[in-house]
Image (cartoon, rainbow, N blue to C red):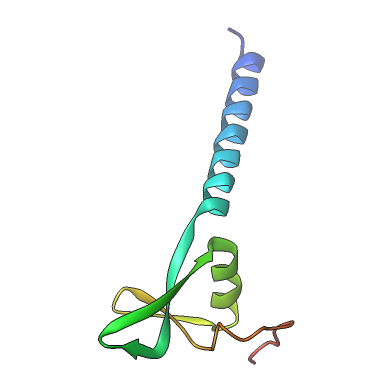
Length: 86
């Protein structure tokens, strides 16, 4: 095999790997616990997709405590466009 063919194979391999990682990221969900709604010792949580976690972390919507993610706002109310906290 010549060099051009090896570079082409490497390029397609990197592209396929990137697509696999994107699909896995779209399918992954995270448990986000409500900060103040512990009922009978049971923590209430909601599953959110990875892309929503990125938005929430950008706008200080989640905090990590003791290895768990906690929400800083009420997720049950309907939200519009978020404002920047700074």
